[in-house]
Length: 172
Image (cartoon, rainbow, N blue to C red):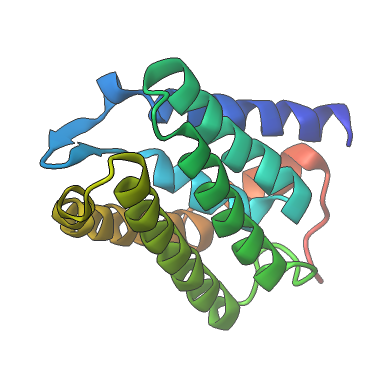
């Protein structure tokens, strides 16, 4: 991993940790509405599978460890599987990955995220009612994150700047 890639990975991990903080979330029934999904989905599209798991999986684990440790292992497993599936789905397709692959990859990641947290919440808090009450908020959070990431990935200069920083040449 080059110094530039490590710098970007560190930035993304720091943002993941910061956006996992409960003081940057909105309290909702059954927990909080977090914005870290945006960075998590974006990480899965931009980085190699192993890098994505370390950045988003371990980064969100650290966010929970520092700010709300009870579900930290649920977070580690769920976000690691989420970004791994997305990154493997688009792996080797170049930047940007084809639109016809990105949306299904993000949807698979969203399903893993929502099912993982539903099961994890039911296990950690030992009540199905607590897990059920948070479902609508989790769905809104993933839909919002996917929409924002899709827009950033395809309709802004972010990806061009990301590639430029890393010295990745544009396709001819």
